[in-house]
Image 1 (cartoon, helix red, strand yellow):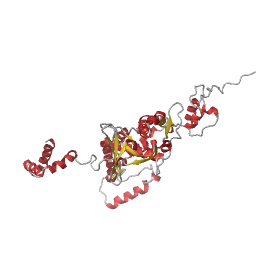
Image 2 (tube, one colour):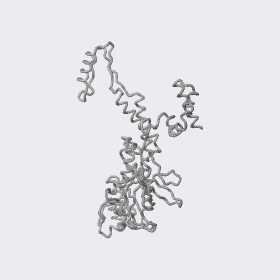
Image 3 (cartoon, one colour):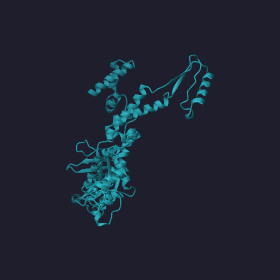
Image 4 (cartoon, helix red, strand yellow):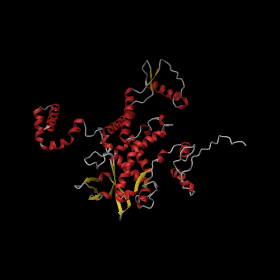
Length: 428
């Protein structure tokens, strides 16, 4: 009844605008029957808002959201970071050795499938997880070993809970058919979930639809300003009316004497009462700029990316950039590390294998500072300055992607280095 009352009120308003009485408008609405209700039920809220789309021109979708530069930057920054970082299959315990002999090691580290390397696979999956909320890959088994991971279209896979609380995945094939797959056959990278069982990751694009829509509108408003607005630097005013030839002569003289970089900062000589007036940005232009910046910040919050990493602040580059990178890893990437690691371990490893193996991202590639900072850090790690050593020579070489040393001492902690080279040698 509430919907029909709203429709009746709308009909009354529209009938009045057409010269109809409220009774005629309501009768016309009733005569349309359930067809009106069926179509109005899906679009009533949009009609009241003034249009079928939140931005007034096009719906915000995961695909078209990437046209916004802030979203493109957030998504590419996170996806490329995940793609470039090493993803290792490790042995649990103190050794922390790479499980090179396990079949899954090469799949994760080198070649997930015939058409993608590890970087391309991880970055593609991460991009889909960011904009759709979910990324899926078909797991190809050979016996009990994973041999391939094939990315699937996120829009064509739907996870569902069985009565026994196991999960199945329904996949729409390219031919239009449907295939039901077991949980072990799908690697599912899911963002935060707000559904009943926590199966389906939420799309950050859809959750931030209004902010993205406003960003679209601000972008279009800026485009209209440059297309239709007057962007002249100033105006010349004359107390008397000028004919076309006089205007042409003044314009040509102005351009000849003062236009271009070669004439920059020259003083103008104005005759016959001509005055020069400089135009400045209006408050409306400033508000448009502020609005665009605000929407960029809103989008950055949705994806957990610090504002300076969106290239918004000229003053963000300097001594604090290393701390900014650490902040981004801790609050923008770490939860994705956990999501990937949990999904791979629970899907691609057996229960017995999970007792002895683990999957770990290595974020140190993003945390490398300057050569000076690295030298000081690793020197202390090896025991320089009398500090207790906590890294071996080969561990340092591993961090720097250098080949391991065959020297026996390279695999053991050395005694602290306490010699002070500034102390003069004892005299005899």
